[in-house]
Every structure is written in structure tokens, then in C-alpha cells.
Image 1 (cartoon, one colour):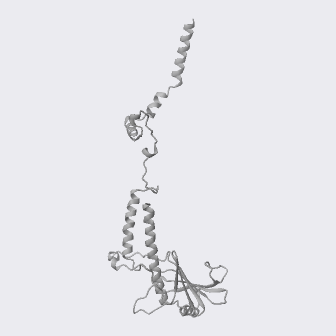
Image 2 (cartoon, helix red, strand yellow):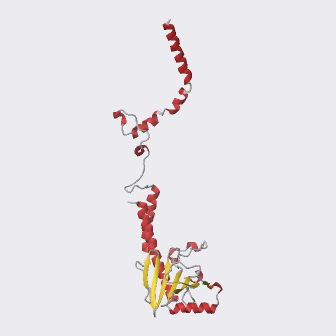
Image 3 (cartoon, one colour):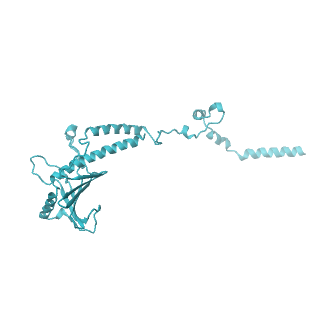
Length: 280
């Protein structure tokens, strides 16, 4: 009797196990890696066949190789090509660099530099004249040339000239405010050739009284815009600047100084960029 009951229980257990996992044979082949895949992963494993352990499929240093150097940064073939280009570019820019040292301004101007910003200071009979300018964005955009003009040799291409906006601040002793001129180089007056009638190569855009030494203009101070200004008053303002050494000669020398400074900063930027890309 007991044997019959035992057989009945065993038979019920077998039928129950078969009915509870009907999908297993369909799932397992999808999860089982092929021999080729298993072999390639095994070759990347550090254990190998000698140790008898199973291969580690997600070992980061093996299955997912990275390209890096001592600095721990990413390096690609594109970075390598970029670094080679920068090396050649730096050599070419140094070849055409006209001034390794910044040219000096005539008239007793003292030069102070802070990165791309320059300051020129001069004292005239108790008055202090300060010129500030920044070489950033001081290169005029290159206009597209006609197709026949693009075939000219590089020797015929015009030199790149920096024409920055500059601010003139005139301070008198015993006064609270300075007379400030916002000046710029008009695009059609950036240069004049020999034999041409000499005209002002820079223009006054705005004039205002501002607290001495303030970097930013106060919006509450009246600002005179010269676009609709009487020409007689404008000429007197230009003469006022010329009497203090800010004339065409000064403007020419300022362009030369700014061009040399801008090129110097450009080469320095390329060198820093090259170092950053190489990351040695």
C-alpha cells in the first residue's frame, strides 16, 4: 500500500515540474554565447585555461580598452592630427611675425599690459591722459573676394591689421570727473596712401564726463553722441585730442602696437592650445 502511494506522489511531482517550466528550452539558447564569442572573451581574460576559472566578461581594462596617457585624458587620432596641424601653424605664424618685441610709442607714452588689454599713460602740463584698448575682436572681418582675385599669390594678400576701439581719458588736477572719449577706426578710413589727402584715420563716437578711473561708464552721466553733432564742435574736440598727442601719428602707431600685440597673443594661444591637446 505504501509503495503505491509513494509512486503516486513521485508521478505527480514529475508532472508538476514539466508543466511549471515550459518556456525554459526556448530561452536558454538565446542566452548561451556562441563558441566564437566565448573564445574571444576567454582570450581577453586574465585567468585563462590554466587557472580553470570562468572568463570575466566585463573586465573594463580588457574588454573596453581606452587610449590615455600619464595625464589621464582621452587621446584620439583626431587629437594627434590636430596637434600636428598646430605645430605647423605655430611655425608659420612665427615666420611672418614682424615684431618679436612690441614697438614703442613716440611721445613719451608709458605702456601697461594686462593680457589682451593695454593702457597708455602720458602726462602733459599737469594733465593725465590715459588710453585703454583691448585687442580682442580687433581684426576687421575679411571680405569675400571675386573669383579672379582669389587666384592671386599670397604675397599680394593684404596684411592683417588690428584696429581696436580705444578710450581716451583726460584728467585735470582738482577736478572730480574726467573727460572721456570713445574712439574707433572707421572701416573706410583705416589707412591712407601716399599722395592722398590726409584725413582723420580715427573718429570720436561718444564723449562724456565720468568719474576718474572708473572702468564702466555710468548710464546716468550724459553722453554726447557725435553722429548728429555740429561739425564745428566735432572739429574742436578732435583738436583738443591732437593737442594732447592723440592725432593721426598716434593712431598709426597704436594700430602697429595693437597688431603686434594681437599677433603675439594669437601665437601664445596656439601654443597653449597645442599643449592642451597633447597633454603631456
